Amino acid sequence: MPKYRVLVSDPISEQGLGALLTSPDVDVDIQTDLAPDELKEIIGDYDALLVRSQTKVTAEIIAAGKNLRVIGRAGVGVDNIDTAAATRYGVVVINAPDGNTISTCEHTFAMLMAMARKIPQAHGKLKAGTWDRKSFVGVELNGKTLGILGFGRIGAEVAKRALAFNMRVLAFDPFLTRERAEALGVKMSTVDEIVENADFITVHTPLTKETKHLLSRDQFARMKDGVRLLNCARGGIIDEKALAEALESGKVAAAALDVFEEEPPLGNPLLDYDQVVTTPHLGASTEEAQINVAIDVAAELLNILQDKPFKNAVNLPSLPGDVRQALEPYLTLAEKLGTLVSSLTDDSVRRIEVTYAGKLADGQTEPMTRYLLKGLLSYHQGETVNYVNAPFLAEQHRIAVEETKTTRHHVYNNLLHVRLVTEGEAVTVAGTFIDGLGPRIVQIGDFTVDLAPQGVLLMTEHRDKPGMIGQVGTMLGMAEINIASMQVGRREEGGRALMVLQVDKTPEEETLRAIEKIADITKFRDVVL
Ligand SMILES: NC(=O)C1=CN([C@@H]2O[C@H](COP(=O)(O)OP(=O)(O)OC[C@H]3O[C@@H](n4cnc5c(N)ncnc54)[C@H](O)[C@@H]3O)[C@@H](O)[C@H]2O)C=CC1
Ligand SMILES: O=C(O)CCC(=O)C(=O)O
Image 1 (cartoon, rainbow, N blue to C red):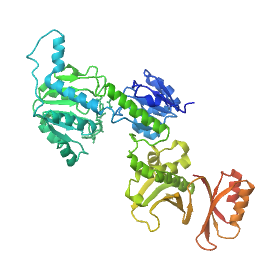
Image 2 (image 1 turned 135 degrees about the vertical axis):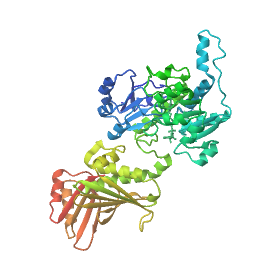
Image 3 (image 1 turned 60 degrees about the vertical axis):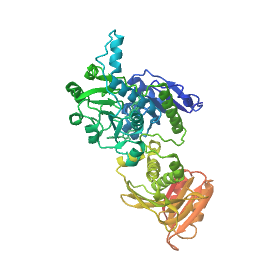
Image 4 (image 1 turned 180 degrees about the vertical axis):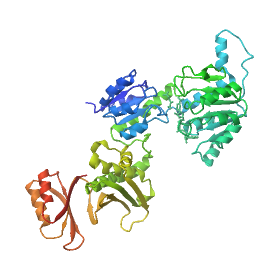
């Protein structure tokens, strides 16, 4: 009996979806002609939704997806998915960033050459019966300067091909380093340098607030006369109105467009210009790319559904496999400490102070804080909290999160210390990971303890006096609750003391309340880790 239901709502290569289609855990429904209302009506039945670019995954659809855990995009751009809404609802959004790089790069290059040699125009005229050799004089690429805005996967592949055609390549990307540019044989440049010096300019960024109209009137005014532009990334990176004016004036000699601000671009005046070579968003439309992206997204989707590590989440910071593996034990520890510290107070939480000490301070701490918040918030909010939405929910509850790192600790090689500050008090726990022993809780409040973070914990704070352990033990015995292990600690003889019992199952409410009422027990808590 399959455990998970996956809805595929756009045409995606079935060959590539093999891993999903053959998994005994998964039931796949392919329905590629759903209207938005129909999708909204049925999405509640599915654990995962798999789309290409046609399906608009709006906040409304995500809200209706009561069981939705993951949305997969068979491709790179996720602008058809409301990722902010997905984060709010704790739904992971994944994409397939590698599978269509080469196809999109090759398409860009095909467009570049088609534009330079006016191939589509000449083709059309000849097919219409006219042998015209005068109207289609083109330009060579040899020796020309190509400016690349956005030097990620596709931009870098375009550069390699341009260099093979003996072009000079200028590149701008906020993450491009001089060393990498030099190694690839391109010149690291500013946007202005590209705008002012390039014969051809191609954009390969995502569409964001910063890249919207990256090339607009101001930039066109500073370009070389007769510059040629390409957009095989996202409509809107080049300002379409400004482009139309620049084509009109002759400033821009030609443009090659695979993408548009509105798709399909019905009535878009750019389609009327003879100098515009165009395709209907075909960058990734090859047999290979469609199989590759489907394979990648199917594998990741399955990983998420089966709670295995995954890497291509768009709304979660990505962790290289080895980093994730090294962090794994601490992630579990962090989540358990979050639950434990939350169980120690009933007040509303204002601030969480997390200290990463020893070797924990050397690496990435964000994932541990995320897991800690998940444990902490789910103590009160249950299953609505997950690793995706925990930081968002903390922010929404106005819980301040403060991280401190200190590379040394006088006792432990690694220590995760959590102080939770509420309106009226502050409670503290700490844990460590000991090789050969596993995760250990080493501090509860101001008491030193040593216990594995697992199972049912009963914790009392009481006055240190004879008979306290016996009274609690007797009550548990009468309720047939077996004690697996016990820790006691005290500040000083006759002073405040702590008892932590690990028991085999959670006692009934009346047993818990009876223990709580024992004279000299000042605080009593139970928690399942
Ligand atoms: N036409 C089509 O069918 C396809 C289009 N695409 C689109 O191509 C674009 C690039 O894809 P990839 O190279 O795979 O992505 P990528 O993530 O590998 O590269 C994008 C690069 O843009 C850079 N960038 C971001 N903001 C920038 C800015 N303001 N100025 C300059 N660079 C900036 C990033 O640092 C990154 O290196 C995406 O928008 C994607 O959706 C991708 C595949 C197919
Ligand atoms: O699915 C497609 O063909 C569109 C590909 C695309 O634009 C992307 O991957 O960003």
